[in-house]
Length: 132
Ligand SMILES: [Zn+2]
Image (tube, rainbow, N blue to C red; front, side, top):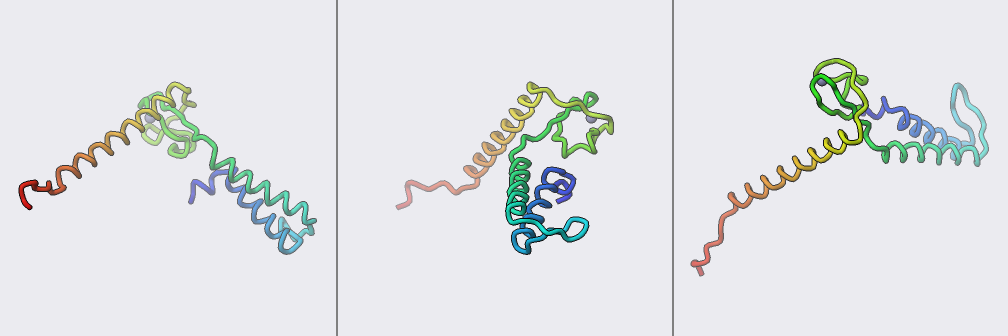
């Protein structure tokens, strides 16, 4: 939840949706005091809020790289841009680095799935063909 709050686009979107809903239902919105709005204004505010939330959820994660430990992080994983391991400023990752990182994650998932499959095969009781 905290990452959502710290995310400006998402927070603005939620605010706009709430303001828009108030406008549609009550004909007025609250922003440092009540203010009357037209239904058109309210609908535009509401739709803008939806668009902001949609944009934020569809947005690609922002990757950064630490030069000291040569690790790639999602920006949300850093401490305001600093490496969580070394506590030094990170750099924006290049496209090549991001691809390598994503491939590594996919590779790991494939391996985990394969290991699970193998484990299941071992623990499953084998059907005895002779018994009938
Ligand atoms: Zn580091």
